[in-house]
Length: 341
Image (tube, rainbow, N blue to C red):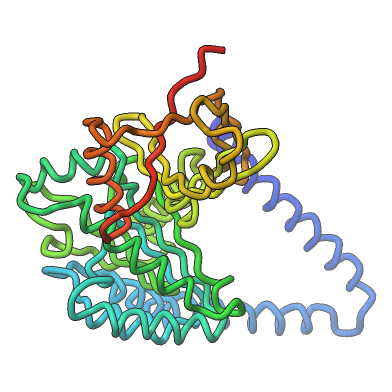
């Protein structure tokens, strides 16, 4: 009884099938040659079951095993070829990917553009370069790899690529930035999944890669982790990484920004020009921020304060702006300081 109790669902289904079978047999009692027809049908079903169990099932099991493999390292060219032939989806979960760098970038983006034109969904999860996890991974790599610059480079490439796509293709490309350190990296094309862990002193592409399927235990595990990060409250869309929305009750501003140790600095020329009459020193604003779940959050009130040319904060902020946006930044820099209200 304990065994049945643990398997209540299966016991219920079995009971329903038994009852349905008995009812059907009773209904058929009035047919001519009932015994002969029953024997004929049961014999045909038995033969079919034997064929499935002993002939078809072994081939299916063998095919599943062939889909499981351990690879010495990540094969970029092979993945790009797979991606170009995708029929349903491409999913990538990474810190950053060198598919968007060097000799792979043009070929990979060409493959992505091709599948987007066929309405294939492409989802890419990359680490937020401002997250502490980026520093942690840099330490794992003995500071020999600039993790932040690599992520920023990926995000710039994706931002420009998405911006240049026609709207009919852009809707199928979704890039999000997460903050937590992922347990694994994942590259998936349809039902082909490549998984690797993050080794110390080595980039994940040069470590062992595990080829699996979404139905296997490892495939289900990384699929669940992808979904968790994709919908996490701290996860942002690509656009939200490049601009910050400020609200002063009368106007809304979209401004470039950097965040340094929880301190926000914004590129404020447009804000200054809009408030020439009254000035912006001490102008109260709130950050209007929504996440990938679509939840909108309005921050506490901040005051906008222009940075003086002699300010140490200005040099630090400009350095971060240049690093994030990839060129010499010529603009008014405003600091967001908490309002005393």
